[in-house]
Length: 311
Image 1: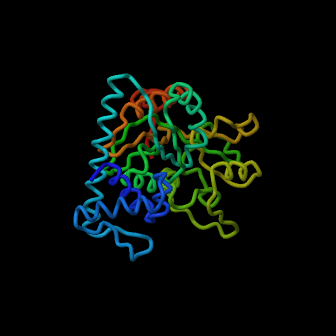
Image 2: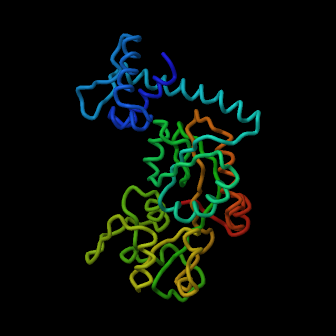
Image 3: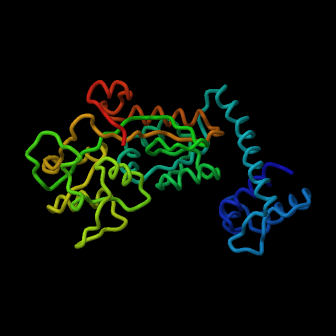
């Protein structure tokens, strides 16, 4: 038994297909299959049920896969210890980030990060919160950037900043600050089910949106809804970073909420057994340094300055 064999069985479990697992491991399928067969022969058990499509682990195989992931995490910790002692920041970092944050946050830090750490290979995927958590538990992701809290004991949360929400509307409210109750739910553009920001906005507005009888928009994005509002069609809610690219004309459609200002907590999240601590700390530092000054404040300072409430 060796670590390479453990990597191969985890790849098959992740991809549920021997061919795709072999490509992910950069080996031929016969080589991968042979190494897994040797491991099964050595242990005297079948790890995968090959009669099923997609391939699934046997009951014993599932237990072995859990242990294999723990073994590889511990083996990875050896490399992490050496790198910390040498002050070296390098390796592969797989990041999942929610789509309502990625277009606005990633461009802020990515160039500086890659310039500072040329030995790091980044892989970034835009995924829903549910997908990020599932992929971290499977070992497919090292870290997620998303809205918290998650209330998941298997996940550690490392808060980064508190991002205020703004009303973006084609209507004139003739007031300086907006109350959630001022928003007409039938004119509100919302993201589809599965986006955490949808739930946050429903909670903010204390509503369960009624279906618009004239137009429903599935798979919509923040950018799509901004453009619909620009055409005098309805209302949407924008997180702070999404407002930074607005033109002067578009900014006239913005209206702040009355304090306590609704915010979402944005965090780095990791599996409780995560390694690559030095890589993730480097990522955290670059993100924080890239933020606008008003988002760098700690929760307590933001609370004193403008008053906030998490939604």
